[in-house]
Image 1 (cartoon, rainbow, N blue to C red):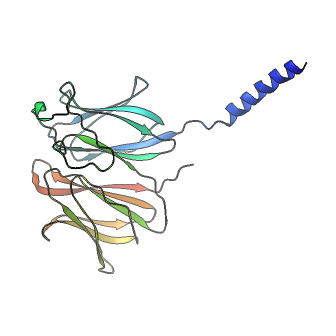
Image 2: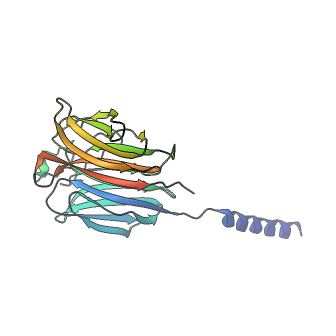
Image 3: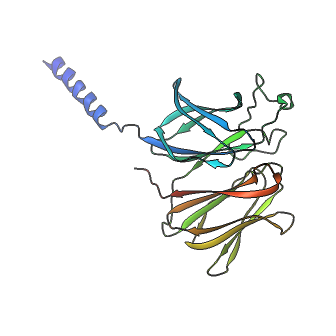
Length: 255
C-alpha cells in the first residue's frame, strides 16, 4: 500500500513540475547587413541540424524583427555562394536582438592567416583588439530590450566603416541648443547607452583628428525607445563618403 501511494505521489509530483515548467517563448531578432560588398549576402540559421531562417540582404539593409524559438543557432553568411562567416549564437527566452554584420570581405582568401579550409571566419567576442584581421567579416549581437527611465529615449552608435579613422559623435538638442559629445570611437567599437530627453535632436560625427563633419542625422526622439546609429560607408564610395543607418526599437520588456 505504501509503495503504491509513493508511486502515485511521484507521478503526481512529476505532472505538477511539468505543468509549472515555463514553455520556451519566442525570441525576436533582426539583421543589419553592413558588410561592404556589392553582392547581396545570404543568411542561413540552423537549429538542431534543421533550417530555421533564411534571408538575402543587400548592403545597408536593416531587416524587420522576426520571431524564432529561443535556443542555440548556427548562423552562416554566404556571398556568391561562398561561406564568409560561420558562427554559433544563443537567443534567450523573450529576448530581443539586433544582429549586425560588418567588415570588408576580401577576394584573396590566403591573406587571412586564421582561415580554416579557405573560409573567411574571424569572430569577435566583445571588444576586440586591433589585429591584421580587423576588416574581415564579423558579426555582433545587440540587446534591444529597453531598461531604465521610461520617460527618456536611449541612443547608442557604432563605428562600422572599415578603413575610416576614429570618429567623434556629437548630440545637439534643437530646442535648447545644448551640445554633448557622445563617445569617440575607433572601428569597430560601440558606444554605451545614453539616456536623452525626448524631442528633436541632431546627431553628427566628425573625424577624431579634426572637426570636419562626415555624417549626420536629424531625429525626433521618443520616450521608451532605443535608437541605434550605424555609421557606414556610402554604397560604392567606401571611405570617401559616410552615411547613417538608424535602427529604432520601441520598449520591450521580458515577461
